[in-house]
Length: 315
Image (cartoon, rainbow, N blue to C red; front, top):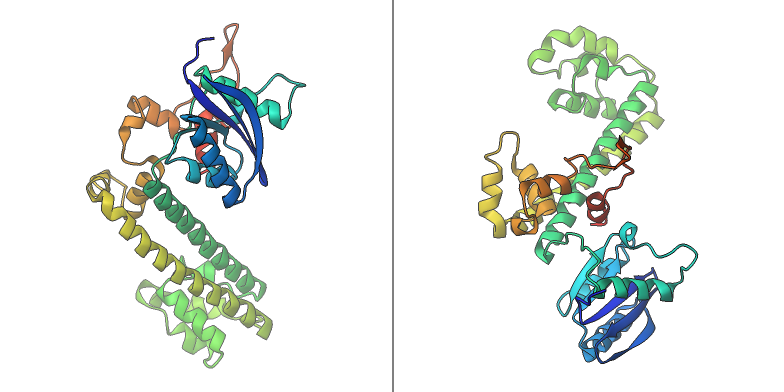
């Protein structure tokens, strides 16, 4: 096959070790194994620079490729490859043969790199994804509180559409204090809920014990701490998004896209649309376009994950 990359390196990445194979003009094929500790990775980088390596290819193995990518990205063209597309011949799989195979494919131009945005976008992506996880954690705690209330036969959710709205939060707060009667607590209803005071009284008649009180207090304290972290993360997101203010505001002109949605889109897709040849490529990368798997005129079901979703999932 025609050689496309003159001097390349293939990496087989693991949690504790990385096996490197170098090939190229004037380079004798050599395989070395390094630890994934930072000091060892810097030695790997120095070795590759000394050989004049220009391209490095590696599989997207879990999260273990990330620190290697972070160290090598400023000195080489690092290509992150979907493992499905570089499978070796069955029965011939070792760490050494894996890195040699990756290196051969790299030099022949047969590897296709995954989309990896620049560092600022990756950091923004970490923040938006972490925020989403924390919001989900808050929802989980609220569901836990609801279960405890049901266990105590407090049917607040049967009367209130949102048990954690203004009225619901006040009612739960007073219920935890235990200093007011059910009738007094029902008077805390606001707005349209004032017409449901009798129903609220009935809903609050249960078997609310000290154990229930303790469990709900613990969940509320957890929610408060999570919301404080979310607030700090949102401040950090606002600072990061300033570099993309124009794109951020333009995205919000799309119906249904607000601040958080716009930040998430920038974090996932970036702002350099040159990475996607056409809008169809972007739609495919986002998982919005069905793929094709046809043989002998018969269409077969696709086996996820697709190339794009697999590469995206690691970030």
